[in-house]
Amino acid sequence: MVDKVETVSLIEEIGTDGHSPMKFICSDESIYYVKYRSGKNFNKNELAFLFYEILCSKLLQALYIPTPPIALVWISEGSFNPDSLKANKRYTKPNITAFGSKEIPNSQLITDFEVIEKKQDFQKIINPLDLIKIAIFDLWVDNNDRGKALKIGGYNYNLLFAPFHGKHQIIAFDHAFTFGGEQSIGIFPKNLPVSIINKLSNSPLFNSIVCFLGKKETLHTVQGFIQECKNFDLHEILISLQRVVPAEWYVFPQLSAQIEEFLSSPQRLDRIEITIKNLLKL
Image (cartoon, rainbow, N blue to C red):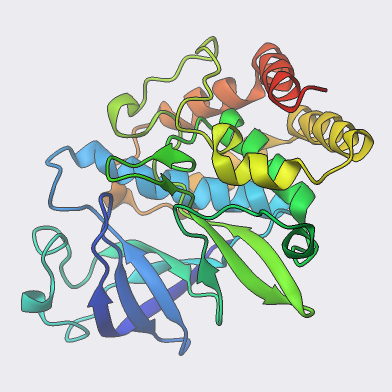
C-alpha cells in the first residue's frame, strides 16, 4: 500500500521552519523530500507527524485530489555525510525508516505572496475546483500549515503548480502539521471548534481564485465533497496503515481510533460545510 525505497545520495537539506526535509536521490532513481524527527524537538511523539503525512496522502489520493507520490524511505549506510546535516543531524541515522514525498518534475512552489489577478491566469489552472476541496480537506484534518500567515509577511501554502496538458495543476503536499499540529499531538476531540485561522480558506490565494468560479459549480463542489467525506471508509485505511507504519515511529495505540472518531463525526462535517459556505457567501 505504501512504496518502499532506499536513499542513495543526499543532495541537500532544505531549511524550513518545520521539518527541514532532506533531498535525496533514492533507489528508484527518483528524488524524494525526506522527513524524520527534526533536531528542534525532543518529543518522540513528533514521529506521529510522519503517520499524518502518510494518512493524508492516502486520503487525498482516495478523494482524487492531486498530491505527490509518497514512500517509506530506508536511510542507507553511506548515503549521506552527517556533517552535511544541520536540523536533522541529531536524529537522522543510517538504518532508520523515514517518510518521503517524491519530487514532481518541473513543478513550482506557489509562493507566499502569490495571487491570481487576471482571468487569463485563472484559465491556465486546470483544476481550480480542487482548491475548494483542499480547503475543505484542511478544515476536516485541521491542517495548521497551509494558508498560515508568516511572521516575515506572506503565507505558507504548501501547494505546487505542476505542468499538465499545457496548463497548471494544483498539487497539495506537506501534511505533517495536521490534527492540530505541534501543540496538539493526540489531543483533537471531535467537538473541537472549526477554525479558519491559518487556513487556506482564509488566505489571499484562495480568495483570488474562487472569485472567478460560478456560484452554482462552487456550491455543487462544496456539497458533493462534504458528502464524500461523510461516506468515506476511514477504518480500512487506518487498519492498513497500522500494518506498515514502522514500530520505531512510536505511533501510540489509541491514535488511529482518535483520528477515526475525529474525522467521522457528521456533526463536525456539518459545521465545516456551514463555515465554508459562509466564507464563499453561498
